[in-house]
Image 1 (cartoon, rainbow, N blue to C red):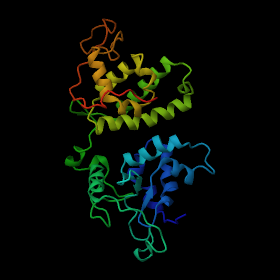
Image 2: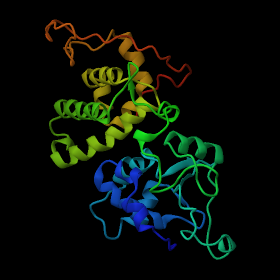
Image 3: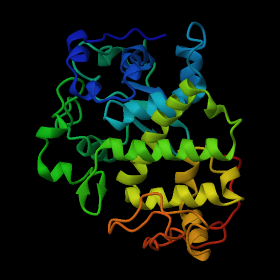
Image 4: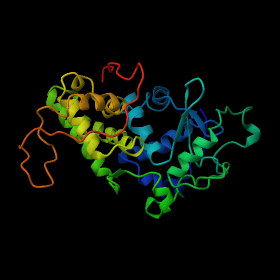
Length: 309
């Protein structure tokens, strides 16, 4: 197993690490750094990561935690960059690890120390810039651990590249978390014997789902209202509520759900979950969400039945 140098002060004072949610994942960053090969790259397969780091003495961590909580949380703040090679194999890279003293010297790489594939430069550059990082040793951009520009100080042009928006306004993470909570509530209502009846497990799922739904807002450009409508429809539909059992599945099937919802004219028999801005009664009638304007992908696979959620 590689030996890697961890910069204590860089971790203790890292602005990016301070933004990692849930908070318990922050300590896992230092726990995962030794996965890095001599060029800072490691095989980013959740089961492999779990096997090497957690299987022996961390019974509290499951493969699903690695896949849906730990790795996404680090990616979300710019501490971990992930990509797939031509063969579909997943790799990860720790931005900033190339700083002097943290990795073996170049003369040892490939001879005494194994190396992984080099991160795709253009994809890495875009990833770093989307996180407000502009200078990284060895690549010419990105600041690495502990010295990233806090989001409140990032240039306006960079903040515009990574917004969580609803109707043109910035929305805090709590709005997205409320969607994850709503999804958990609806799933539990449909199936009172669901594993979500366990309060601690439910909270962990909500934290993980918040990350998935934040991506749906930031990357897929869905608004909070649109996602809320989609959740209400999916969990009120006899077929979809048996299949949409996580935010990841909701995101995966979003376009199929959108099409089905529009075909059926909205959420059948479900009162408006948000009420009316005009002060009208919440029980005035079924809630019919506005048609979602984004196009639905065409093709033979566009309407395939979903896998088990």
